[in-house]
Amino acid sequence: MTRESNPTVLLVDDQADVREALRLLLKSEGFASIGVDGPSAALETVRQRDFGCALIDLNYTRDTTSGEEGLALLDALRQHVPELPVVVMTAWGNVPLVVDALRRGAGDFIEKPWDNARVLSIVRTQIALGEGARRQRRLEAENALLRGGGEALIAESPAMRRVMELVARVAPSDANVLVLGENGTGKGVIAQALHAQSRRAAKALVKVNMGGIAENVFESEMFGHVRGAYTDARSERIGRYELADGGTLFLDEVGNVPISQQPKLLRVLEDGEFERLGSSRTQSADVRLVSATNADLAVEVEAGRFRKDLLYRLNTLEIRLPPLRERRDDILPLARSFLERSAARYGRHDLRLAPSAERALLAWRWPGNVRELGHLMERAALLAEQDLVSDSALAFGPGPGGGTAAASTELDDMTIDQAEAHLVRRALERHDGNLQHAADALGITRQTLYRRMEKHALRDPASDDDG
Ligand SMILES: Nc1ncnc2c1ncn2[C@@H]1O[C@H](COP(=O)(O)OP(=O)(O)OP(=O)(O)O)[C@@H](O)[C@H]1O
Image (cartoon, rainbow, N blue to C red; front, side, top):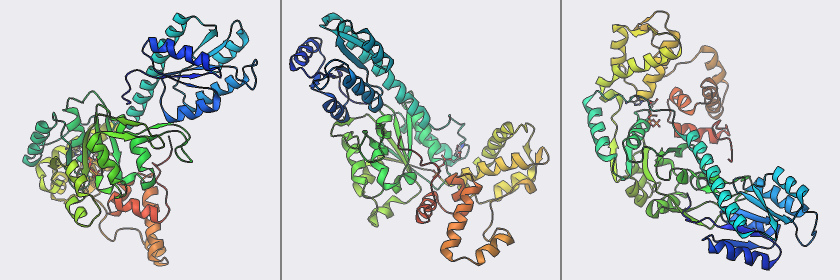
């Protein structure tokens, strides 16, 4: 969110005295304004900063009566900065032109010579409408980013109870928290709990997966960009940092922030200030940071891949999540909860675990932790032939060397590189492009999968747009 108290009005008119009269009128009501003399200067200016509203003349020197230039400017503004309310100024009585402008999206019109009170009332109304539109767009963007709903968090084991006590103690503070743990141990769930128990709970929890952001889009993802900031930036975009204003920003897989981008992250963490890519305007946001990693960041610092000063910014407090194999008391409560949820989804309401299944679940080492348990229960709910799910109905992860004879013959004829590309592609296909599931199936981390995909030029189905 920008920190400007009173929005600025853009005045576009080729006559300097008109601009000056409007500037003084607006100033008397506390509105700042910037005046420019024509369409190209107007378009240049809206690229550089935000306005609460624009007042544009419809006739410029090149063509002083038809209004064509003004209407073209109106169209361009609607396209470039759709939330900016535009008020058109016309000569008295030019009804067809006014109608045309309103049809093309002008918020209102002013006839010259104008009535001061009417100008001020229109400007106030249009600014309020524009703010409403921006707020709406923010909410939509936030909703799209929020993780799907709060799921029940299970913490029966002594180790997890201690974690939850720590969460309760640190959540209300604004301190940055680093959540550590193997893949699938529930770091995202803990980030959600920290947010839900904080005074920011009513605001957004914005998640960014650092493992999934390519180096060249890092800055625009995090801090947004203005239109035209780079070749594909067709529209303005709000960054994740700004979206988290007043709320919590969750940086997942923070160990993957490229070293070249780490100073940018450090700067915003130090003073809360940033610029949208392509803009020189400094903005600020009030953000509480929770980050997570399965990497040993001390080792990354040693190796020169992670800045020590950044680590110290992130880990004001650390929460370590034990792997599932070290909290066996959670296994069955989690399994029952996942089975119940999947059973409801697939209409198998009477499904329950047989003692043999419970013994098998307790004996498994859970390399994929809680996530693996969730997937196993979902498969069981789908595939179980009887309501009582026995150990034989549990398809524990493929052991090393799993795979069909046909697949191995295919692999026999490939180079190692080809085989790797083939396996990655097949895993992505089998798991409908879900990177985590594909990585689990391949027995590698999501980061490693991501690197392999880059190496073999396989597309990440989630990285789609420029906004
Ligand atoms: N204590 C818990 N209670 C209920 N569900 C849990 C718990 N811990 C994890 N889960 C579930 O397990 C899955 C994996 O959790 P999550 O994504 O938070 O793990 P993670 O440690 O962030 O994984 P990664 O390191 O791969 O990003 C999610 O579906 C989550 O809802």
